[in-house]
Image (cartoon, rainbow, N blue to C red; front, side):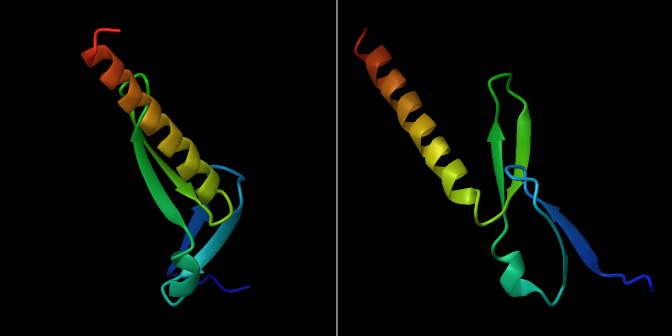
Length: 79
């Protein structure tokens, strides 16, 4: 089997799915997204997610964003 250059390995941080995509695989590449965040220890994280796991991750982050906003709002009120 020959060695083929020009491919990138994508691994989903959620389900562990692995694919190899070349520069011509633009449609497939668009289905994978990198999400950056800062964890509770103030450490930057970057996660690559497939199209199946991305909606669950995004929903969780939106929920956490709302919880943080609610916390700050309650702190401003002196609760």
